[in-house]
Length: 422
Ligand SMILES: *[C@@H]1O[C@H](CO)[C@@H](O)[C@H](O)[C@H]1NC(C)=O
Ligand SMILES: *[C@@H]1O[C@H](CO)[C@@H](O)[C@H](O)[C@H]1NC(C)=O
Image 1 (tube, protein in one colour):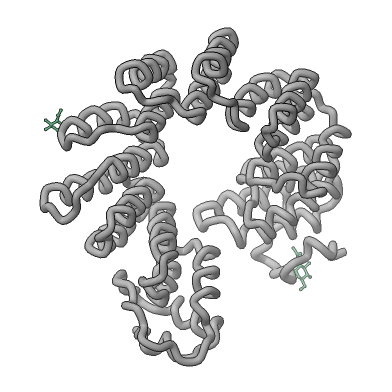
Image 2 (tube, helix red, strand yellow):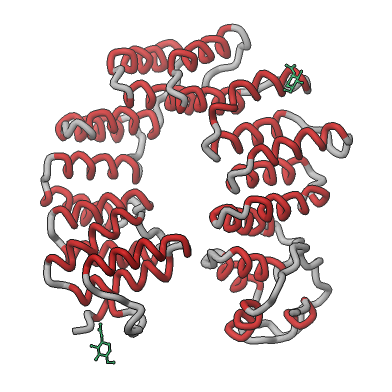
């Protein structure tokens, strides 16, 4: 069993990791703050950074136990490890880890953060129990802050159907006055439940009865839903109401909702016109805006325009690509059979730790093989197998089998992607 004292002695990181990976049962209780750390390696920063790349929950937990719980980022690491457990369907372990942090969350902001972590770990009901228990034992006076964190835990974990009921029940039961944030969570949940009409009722209620001014974010959420379900007329009416009656200045999210509507219809002119309008209004187009522009070009199979956006926006660093950008680009370049560009995109998604989803990457790999680039395809699969959580390994094996190669037979040299190993 590895003791924390041994951890603190100057072991090299790789040796430490080897030791940790053979540790039988890691202790869920984190190490108390150390008095004076002796020789540096491994530093807290490297451990923390390393933790973020580990997906095996036991290893992540071992790394967590070597971090000091006194640093402010510790709570993020706890949340991350809990999520690792949940992704491996070990929900009880996730709950145990988060529950163990409750007594340490004496400030409400820390408790609220913890509640949000229950959501990220897909166990918001355990967060609800913690919330009620803390009120019952009087160990913390909870306010709308915790209430909002709890509601957003349900929202974020996909259990948004529960939000409207909890909103009413908890606010009444515990005499909490919902604020604009609470309403935005409620309205978002209603929209996700395809109850846009109810969301519009709530918008009216908060504005007219509760006297809370809807924020642009709330309008953005409803607009987004209306455009998504093709209620174009209603959306435009709400847009005008927002601008004229409330003086809310449309932000990037509101514009993006509108742009999305036209992009998915391939209406390039309208999309470009709206981007121009945005810029004129002093709202900077975002990554999401350009993602929609890319979607619009793909819709029309305008591969050259895709390349232009890729080069002029993302390569020129006008906007940073996000996970969706990488997915859209990789899919687009695969369909357009531009595999050199595809590899470039894949490589930078690896560097940014934003490798697209399984379906997209396997489509790309298939394209590479069909294009006679089996060596590149192998290198790509090798890289994704390293990165994707364990549960996907079988899927990858099937892809390899379908494409007629296996990485298990021969261990390829590490990063063959750049060099092209043939
Ligand atoms: C909230 O729900 C609980 C459990 O379902 C119930 O016992 C309680 O009476 C409800 N409170 C209100 C104010 O509706
Ligand atoms: C595996 O490597 C051996 C030599 O090390 C080679 O003969 C064989 O063809 C390789 N198999 C595959 C599937 O690449």
